[in-house]
Length: 281
Image 1 (cartoon, rainbow, N blue to C red):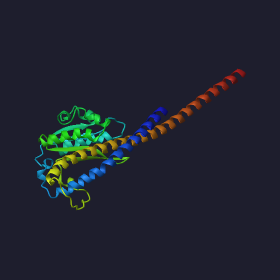
Image 2 (image 1 turned 180 degrees about the horizontal axis):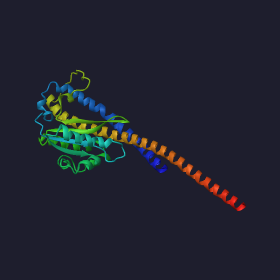
Image 3 (image 1 turned 135 degrees about the vertical axis):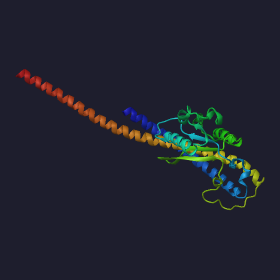
Image 4 (image 1 turned 60 degrees about the horizontal axis):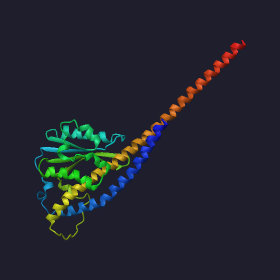
């Protein structure tokens, strides 16, 4: 039991270190993503959303659900919640649609690879699960570009990403975010962007054509960073509880062991005393 305590304690410390790096990456991404959203918000009001390919609202027939999990377990219900929510969306909200499930993370792949709806081969790179070993903007782009290309080619009418949003170290909330098509309110910041007098070069239309795909890629990368931070937060919490439980169990087992040992010693003493009295008798 002591060795189990040492293992869980070590895993907790490793996850704490990785969580700090993941949170730092999220914090560094936010100013860039926020400014990009601010510019798009300023532009979107004066442009027709129909001019943007990724805002093209059409009849929804083909839906892609992107389940984002980790590659490893020992992180509580972090992965199971994603699998359950993906199944719920497929069976309830999109039961009348042609649903394809694509997965980012080995735990989701293991859960859905035998499903008839599994479609990683159609929409994602073959080595998609390796992204958690080197989570960078460039590597995330290889996934988001595939999804965007499928939407542009009208192979899919809607893309929804199911992931864990990291609220704090101990809390992750499952979110199902519509990635494509872009909803107009998604181009608006929560607090209305200030009215700024921009000078546009080239035209607004060309800038939006360039910035909208970049914004989608940034959003997708942010989701992966959130999930990565949430994974380590969940694992750190799970290992902390496991260490506490192992400590309590170790204490209880030691108490039982000492009681049994004391009882054995007492019995031996009684047998010796009884034998001595028999010899003297």
